[in-house]
Amino acid sequence: MKILNHKLEDEHVDHSHPTSKTSGEFASGLPDTVVIHYTAGKDAISAVRTLTKPSIKASAHLVVGRDLKIYQLAPFNVITWHAGKSNWKTRSRLNNYSVGIEIDNAGRLELGLDGEYISWFKKSYRKQDVVQARHRNETNLSFWHRYTEDQIGLVFEICESLMESYPIHTIVGHEEISPGRKIDPGPAFPLDKLRERLLYADRKSDELSDDEISDEPAFTEGFVKANQLNIRHRPSLQSGRVTAPLQKGTRVKIIDQKGDWLKVKVEAEGWVSGKWIDVQ
Image 1 (cartoon, rainbow, N blue to C red):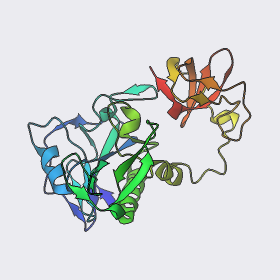
Image 2 (image 1 turned 90 degrees about the vertical axis):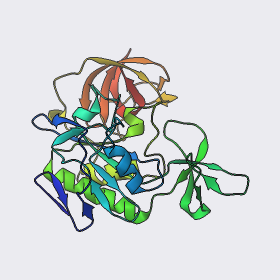
Image 3 (image 1 turned 180 degrees about the vertical axis):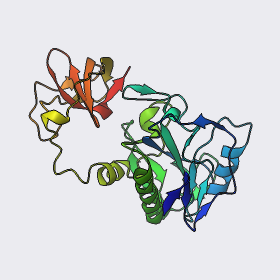
């Protein structure tokens, strides 16, 4: 699999459904982010029809089917409308920075009276096609349509190809950039494993040297959204804690950023995992 002239080239790629719903080309040095979605529909082709329908104010670059067919709706050098109202770290409007990948998956399911698992569009699924898990933004377990292993592997391969052609340094789920509004791709997709394998696998450790840490602070505020959040001396899970964990709702001043870590200042100053900060 490779990318030529901003198009994915592979025997499984279909380029015959282009969308007109774009906002011009990315600025220089972009895209640098990938946003993962699920389609929440009955199949890939229905998602393609929706994403190319002029009256629907949404589009994306790719749709990945359960049969491993890939539909490319727009070249990777143009902006599509997949993220909507969104924020990540110091950025907003993630459409302007990111490639949108839609994966054929029904999303959240409900357990019916007859023991079948039902989607919002009333299609039923077998138990072997369902996973019970807790969403990263929720507290209770619920049922989710299972992605196939081949489908997951294909998305990993696509992201790897994107990283070879563009300066991709961030991979996020729609649920992370629009929490409370969106829940895709959900806990059935191994988003953290994807990031670990593609973004961090070549690091000898999580520890960062002093000359790798930026001297240009972001000077942004945020709020802690975890129940408790450790604040550390350095951007590493192995680094010692500066003080007692920060409590949910604590206002912090963001003074620096490195990868997924944010340097924050409250009464003390130290590093926290950025995924647990709601940046304002």
